[in-house]
Image 1: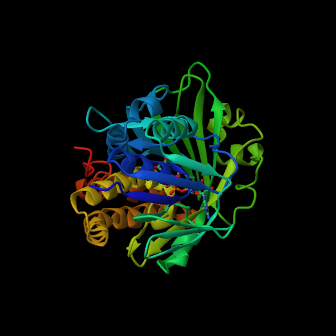
Image 2: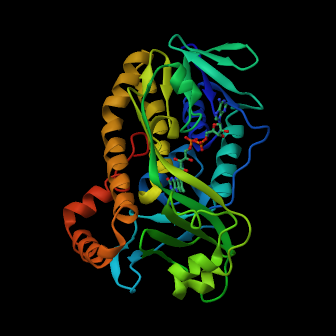
Length: 375
Ligand SMILES: Cc1cc2nc3c(=O)[nH]c(=O)nc-3n(C[C@H](O)[C@H](O)[C@H](O)COP(=O)(O)OP(=O)(O)OC[C@H]3O[C@@H](n4cnc5c(N)ncnc54)[C@H](O)[C@@H]3O)c2cc1C
């Protein structure tokens, strides 16, 4: 059978995962990254069971998580210390939190082993349904399949007229790493709620913890970089030990939701945040990206007709992604849109809701899903 070739726009987590999944199945792959070098910023990333299984199938799970802590419990607490939610993890139901850079480096190394050609300083501007990727220098690269993995603001997706909606949401997130000290919780993730602010503490490795500060976009002091520690201390006076360790570095992002008219057109497909960017409250954006790119390669393997394979892929894989996009947005709204004066009622509501098995199933539907191609 003739070797098939893919051209991919974007060497983020999505583009690299797609390149590996295809290269493992015999495709030749070239990835175009607009940045001049491959670099990842300092933060941690939640990898759930579905993402871990997908990464294992891609041959990167061990490398990506070698320094990471295995999380045993996840708890959300309100300003009074009341537990709003509690989740325990066990075998076959894992949450692991590596630094993003470890995950990114593992994907790059694996792509290299599979002879994926990664071209930096190469900006894609458009794709065609007949399998061409056009770059900013005017060159056109032909392929059996073109993949837009160029993130939430995807220019390639829009050139294919696949954008349905791009929503800018009311909350934003500052991500950073802090040094770890003796006595820090080692296996428990805690999300502290105070009014419309949240502080997420995540044990990451033996050396660092990952902290995520969530606030409303109108909260100008809350989203300031460097972090206004005195102001965050006023919201979380009991967390001085964590907040004092925050340094000058940090990255603030506004939550976004991207909805596509379809995930493909002709010989072009859209993956990752380009296809389904979502607020990060359930920590599933990248996990879904891994399982969806793995499934994409699997469907293309089963059906040689590319358009038929892409149609099956979307039909089977998209409903779960749509579901998680809805629930992660709902979770964010409970935090950012609930009036402060009804904080006590919110605590009661969340505490009760989290004990309802149906709610637990909705929130963890992706984490408990066995990805296609990873069985
Ligand atoms: C605050 C926050 C916390 C999160 N936490 C988690 C978590 O814990 N777990 C989880 O699963 N997910 C999480 N996510 C989501 C996750 O980070 C994303 O889903 C994931 O990074 C998407 O990867 P991507 O490759 O699709 O997009 P991106 O990471 O945006 O990568 C796109 C790449 O394409 C390149 N590019 C852009 N335009 C072009 C172009 N025209 N030509 C060539 N290259 C181009 C960019 O430079 C970039 O390298 C979080 C998101 C946020 C905002």
